[in-house]
Amino acid sequence: MNTLLNIICNKKVKYSILILFLLFLYVTVCAFSYVNAVSRDISNSVFRLHVIANSDSTEDQNLKYIVRDNVLAYMNNICKSAKSKEEAISIANEHLDEFKQIASNTIKENGFEYDVNVEIR
Image 1 (tube, rainbow, N blue to C red):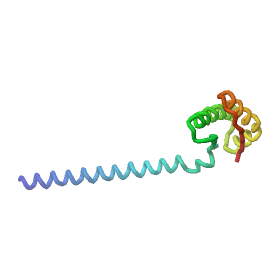
Image 2 (cartoon, rainbow, N blue to C red):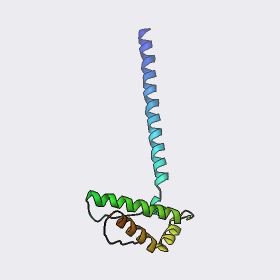
Image 3 (cartoon, rainbow, N blue to C red):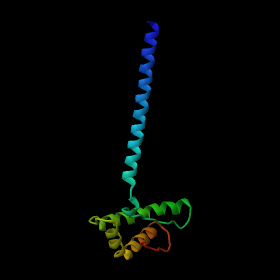
Image 4 (spheres, helix red, strand yellow):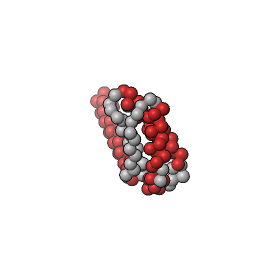
Protein backbone atom coordinates (compact mmCIF):
# COMPACT_ATOMS: atom_id res chain seq x y z
CA MET A 1 0.00 0.00 0.00
CA ASN A 2 2.79 2.37 0.88
CA THR A 3 4.54 1.64 -2.42
CA LEU A 4 1.34 2.33 -4.35
CA LEU A 5 1.00 5.68 -2.55
CA ASN A 6 4.60 6.57 -3.42
CA ILE A 7 4.03 5.68 -7.07
CA ILE A 8 0.85 7.81 -7.20
CA CYS A 9 2.59 10.75 -5.48
CA ASN A 10 5.59 10.45 -7.80
CA LYS A 11 3.30 10.49 -10.83
CA LYS A 12 1.50 13.58 -9.50
CA VAL A 13 4.82 15.32 -8.91
CA LYS A 14 6.08 14.36 -12.36
CA TYR A 15 2.87 15.57 -14.02
CA SER A 16 2.95 18.79 -11.99
CA ILE A 17 6.53 19.46 -13.04
CA LEU A 18 5.67 18.66 -16.66
CA ILE A 19 2.67 20.99 -16.60
CA LEU A 20 4.72 23.78 -15.01
CA PHE A 21 7.44 23.33 -17.62
CA LEU A 22 4.90 23.42 -20.46
CA LEU A 23 3.28 26.51 -18.96
CA PHE A 24 6.68 28.21 -18.71
CA LEU A 25 7.44 27.26 -22.33
CA TYR A 26 4.06 28.61 -23.49
CA VAL A 27 4.51 31.94 -21.66
CA THR A 28 8.04 32.31 -23.05
CA VAL A 29 6.90 31.69 -26.64
CA CYS A 30 3.99 34.13 -26.22
CA ALA A 31 6.31 36.80 -24.79
CA PHE A 32 8.78 36.49 -27.67
CA SER A 33 5.95 36.55 -30.20
CA TYR A 34 4.52 39.70 -28.63
CA VAL A 35 7.87 41.49 -28.57
CA ASN A 36 8.50 40.54 -32.18
CA ALA A 37 5.07 41.77 -33.29
CA VAL A 38 5.40 45.07 -31.43
CA SER A 39 8.93 45.86 -32.57
CA ARG A 40 8.57 44.77 -36.20
CA ASP A 41 9.47 47.62 -38.53
CA ILE A 42 9.54 50.15 -35.70
CA SER A 43 12.37 52.03 -37.38
CA ASN A 44 10.13 52.59 -40.39
CA SER A 45 7.40 54.20 -38.32
CA VAL A 46 9.30 56.23 -35.73
CA PHE A 47 10.67 59.73 -36.22
CA ARG A 48 13.96 59.91 -34.32
CA LEU A 49 15.34 63.15 -32.91
CA HIS A 50 19.00 63.62 -32.02
CA VAL A 51 20.10 66.70 -30.11
CA ILE A 52 23.85 66.81 -29.69
CA ALA A 53 25.33 68.80 -26.83
CA ASN A 54 28.32 71.10 -27.22
CA SER A 55 30.29 68.98 -24.71
CA ASP A 56 29.94 66.29 -22.06
CA SER A 57 29.77 68.86 -19.26
CA THR A 58 26.79 68.72 -16.92
CA GLU A 59 25.68 72.20 -18.01
CA ASP A 60 25.75 71.33 -21.72
CA GLN A 61 23.98 68.02 -21.14
CA ASN A 62 21.23 69.75 -19.14
CA LEU A 63 20.90 72.37 -21.88
CA LYS A 64 20.62 69.59 -24.47
CA TYR A 65 17.58 68.18 -22.66
CA ILE A 66 15.92 71.59 -22.45
CA VAL A 67 16.49 72.15 -26.18
CA ARG A 68 15.18 68.64 -26.91
CA ASP A 69 12.01 69.23 -24.90
CA ASN A 70 11.30 72.57 -26.61
CA VAL A 71 11.94 71.15 -30.09
CA LEU A 72 9.77 68.10 -29.35
CA ALA A 73 6.93 70.28 -28.09
CA TYR A 74 7.00 72.25 -31.33
CA MET A 75 7.35 69.06 -33.41
CA ASN A 76 4.37 67.47 -31.66
CA ASN A 77 2.30 70.58 -32.30
CA ILE A 78 3.02 70.87 -36.03
CA CYS A 79 2.87 67.12 -36.71
CA LYS A 80 -0.18 66.18 -34.66
CA SER A 81 -2.14 65.42 -37.83
CA ALA A 82 0.65 63.45 -39.55
CA LYS A 83 -0.39 59.91 -40.40
CA SER A 84 3.06 58.50 -41.21
CA LYS A 85 6.74 58.99 -40.61
CA GLU A 86 7.16 60.29 -44.16
CA GLU A 87 4.44 62.89 -43.64
CA ALA A 88 6.05 64.00 -40.36
CA ILE A 89 9.42 64.34 -42.10
CA SER A 90 7.83 66.38 -44.88
CA ILE A 91 6.19 68.71 -42.37
CA ALA A 92 9.41 69.02 -40.37
CA ASN A 93 11.39 69.90 -43.52
CA GLU A 94 9.01 72.80 -44.09
CA HIS A 95 9.83 74.15 -40.61
CA LEU A 96 13.64 73.88 -40.46
CA ASP A 97 14.05 77.58 -39.76
CA GLU A 98 11.57 77.39 -36.86
CA PHE A 99 13.43 74.43 -35.34
CA LYS A 100 16.68 76.36 -35.58
CA GLN A 101 15.08 79.45 -34.04
CA ILE A 102 13.60 77.48 -31.15
CA ALA A 103 16.96 75.84 -30.42
CA SER A 104 18.82 79.16 -30.67
CA ASN A 105 16.35 80.97 -28.44
CA THR A 106 16.45 78.19 -25.86
CA ILE A 107 20.24 78.27 -25.80
CA LYS A 108 20.31 82.06 -25.37
CA GLU A 109 17.55 82.01 -22.72
CA ASN A 110 19.73 79.64 -20.71
CA GLY A 111 22.80 81.89 -20.88
CA PHE A 112 24.82 80.16 -23.60
CA GLU A 113 26.08 81.22 -27.02
CA TYR A 114 26.31 78.19 -29.30
CA ASP A 115 25.76 77.75 -33.01
CA VAL A 116 22.81 75.60 -34.05
CA ASN A 117 22.67 73.21 -36.98
CA VAL A 118 19.44 71.43 -37.96
CA GLU A 119 19.25 68.49 -40.35
CA ILE A 120 16.43 66.16 -41.23
CA ARG A 121 17.38 62.84 -42.79
